[in-house]
Image (cartoon, rainbow, N blue to C red; front, side):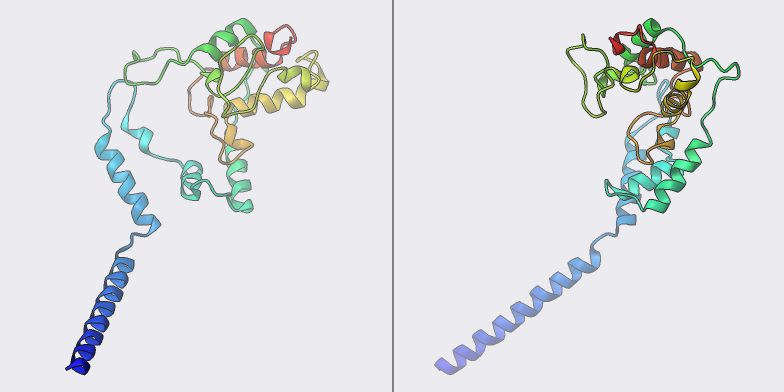
Amino acid sequence: MKKTINQTAKRVSLVSMSLGVAVLLASCAMAPTSQQVAEATQQVMKSSFRAQGEAKMDRLVQDASNQACSEAAGAALDEKLAKAIEAANLKTVKFPADGKLIGDWAEGEKIAQNGRGLTWSDPANSVNGGSCYNCHQISKAELSFGSIGPSLYNYGKLRGVSNPASPESKPIVDYTWGKLWNSKAYNACSDMPRFGHAGILTEQQIRDVMALLLDPKSPVNQ
């Protein structure tokens, strides 16, 4: 009798183990791939968002650069791919036809402080801000600022820009314009908005932000 009970217990144990393995295999077989997760995420986003005001559905469409960075999910990109993305974005940088890159730093400060624009509640064709303080420290007087990006305090001073119009300053002036126009030209997966490339800021607004960063009289460089 005891032997029969033991044999029965073993059979139950084997059956339970088999069922457990079967369930485990089934769960593995049904585990979604990263592509399926991405597609499901896109479907959820498309079904959850609607076009309203300035916010259109085309904002859910990623270009090749953004898509590659999204697929990396925070991991470092392959170096060759990163360089290709940067090169492609560098080609999109547009410099003013008149060659003037520096505007009014006081207007640039207003743009840096302004976080409005491009939301569903903004009037059509409203002027956008740069919302720079959301990510950077810019002036010494500002007590509240974001830390996603590096501090830009003394940006021009630290780079030896005493006169933005001088030939010696041209490399850093050109770089700064390119960075503001399309940040991915220098960092493939930069979180910084592509102000010029995406049409967030106008050419004149970018000139004014350039002055904020580079003009020796700007509070940034005091």
